[in-house]
Length: 72
Image 1 (cartoon, rainbow, N blue to C red):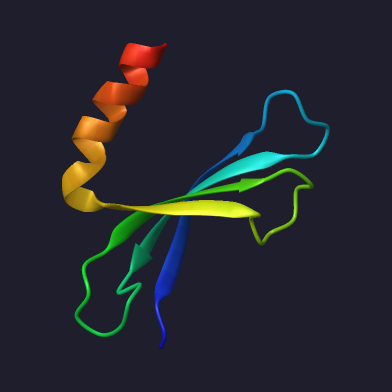
Image 2 (tube, helix red, strand yellow):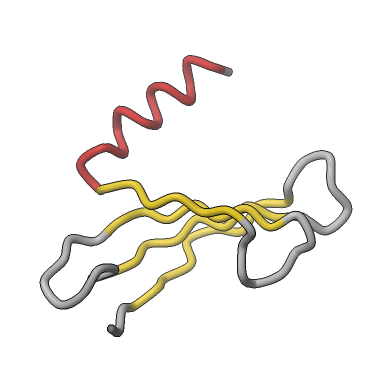
């Protein structure tokens, strides 16, 4: 399975020395023809491979951003 990953932004993870949040777009993450997703990865050590990640379908991004803004 091949997919294209485009890193959109790397954000220093507050409260850590080297941690980071990586926001990426992944095309065809689940195989040919699958819809693109936004990927949010968290690495406490700053490694390029995050310890945690979540894939958000593109159709859910607006609602997710709205929910995150309401927390702030």
